[in-house]
Image (cartoon, rainbow over all chains, first blue to last red):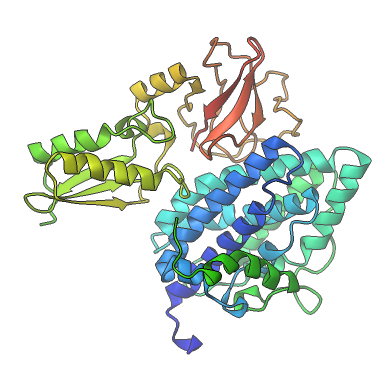
Length: 241
Length: 191
């Protein structure tokens, strides 16, 4: 069956699942953010991503069914975006890695005339603010106190192994993946250096790194996240406001 | 039925009516002033299709806007009203009319600046508040987000304002504070 999935659907699901899952993770900060402004900022970023997810999943089928009724193995999001929020530094490192990737990827998709160009052209403007938010926080925490520096360093190291997966080609997306990866590495390295952090040295792909989210293999915390995200819809099928 | 011909007088009237609907979150603005109603096409004697575009992809107001447009056009004799959301070309804050900007300012929200050409902007060290390298408190979000030049305070008009947060009460606004009159205010940020 899987071999018959049309190619644009594969791409819509991959991009849509990234946005949906990260949106849900960021939403978990509601009521827990360190300061009120961040509470609002993370919720707004989550809302942008949810809007993108709705458009993308609707390109692949029924958005609610896809979001709430698929099993874990049917999700093709990157393992990076499903990682737990951790402390604030972990959330910022995840945002830095992902929003830089998404910004560069969507800018490239927006330049083309493919099926995703209209959404990408719209979303790239939103993601520019997400990326800016993550960069500013990386600078502030990295070049902050000893404690904030150490936490930011730990977070950047911990999530580094999930970053190689972002550049696996996605069927149906006409993207220069090696070029995208080089641009991402340049951009992220530049921010880390300015933040007085060092670019992590660990592997970004291969046997010791993660990276099979696009194939439906996920890390252990993802199942619990999905259970929480889906339980209302599954418990009360067809419920609405 | 689908033609690219110029709007008929009735279509122009319906466009005016659809555009006169107030924004549910910024009721001082009409949808026309916000620049989100794109077109109105008759699909029969009393059937009409409206194209609108969201400010942000995830803007939760879009459903309320659609319902309001439907209601207004039904009240004016349309039996069948379809509101379609289009993404392309992407909405920009440059689509807000001058009258819309004036009303925003009067309402206490700093209007978006006209967007500068995009291009690399040097990244500055982020302090709690955004201070530019030369010490001038500019509004510019460093990095990749558009917009440059001062954001004058909508209350007292001073250019001496600072960024508190890139995200505010809604996705489309940033939170700022005036250093002259000390009032915090929302800024409709540039996209």
